[in-house]
Image (cartoon, rainbow, N blue to C red; front, side, top):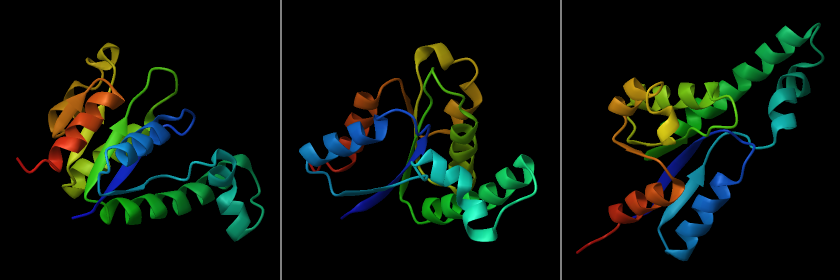
Length: 148
């Protein structure tokens, strides 16, 4: 059985590659998907498709609509969502995606450092599992496939 995992969270660090590499090493039957990781492409997709917008707000709104469509479709097709909250970057998209996963009834593994326990306590209580590191999330993912 292969599962599809949507990797929600910031696109500035290599945490997704870490998960993909560890999954490959463990030979887990997992297919990964997630948000557009090319930040410039994500920001400009609205103008690329709809043409130049008159100001930055409308440019952001055009891109947001297309990015939200992509996220909704890929998340709906996923079997599991792993959402990472880091300490370095603003986490609005992560919060939105994790909340969408809960709303869609998607199983959710939430990765957040101990320092973010308090601001994420309600979301943590809605997640199936909350861990503090990518390695812990990988142990949970690996456990799903254990037979004995």
